[in-house]
Amino acid sequence: LRRRFEYRSVQTYPILLCVNTANPLSERKSVSFGDLKDEQFLTLGKKSLYHAATRDKAAEYGFVPKIVFESSDVNQLCNLVNSNKGIVVGTSSPSFGVLYPNIRTVPFDEPDMQVCIAFIFQSYSKLDADAKAFIQFIVASAGFSQ
Image (cartoon, rainbow, N blue to C red; front, top):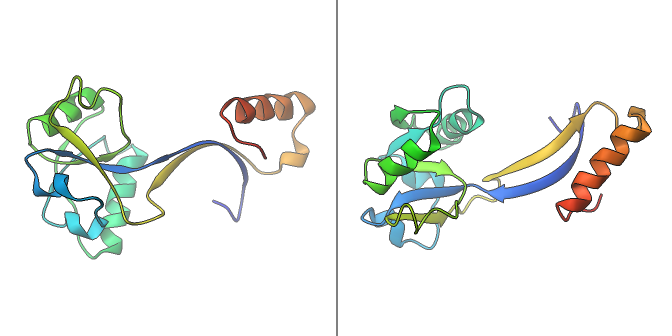
């Protein structure tokens, strides 16, 4: 992506392991994706970037993730993690600890485990003034300066 397109980051979030407090991984300060080889994965549907990223990252560590359930409903996935039915690779939510008291998030050791919301274009210099102003406004509102 970085070779063919230019981009302006809006916000970057760490990707975390969402795991039930009964799972031994919940006690760790951090995990490597390779530590998940024997875990049961709950994922968003096949069209989700999280689904593809989970498969790609597992392949880097030489395994195929055991995906036991897929859903487009994030609340359903959280309920399953909260009930200790598997793990989710995703981002944190304010509802963890409140609506889902049994979910703990654990950071990954790998620095590339993050998701970025961004404007992507072929050439920033070719955008019209209104488009540039809009992008600059959104990026500035999110706290980034580029």
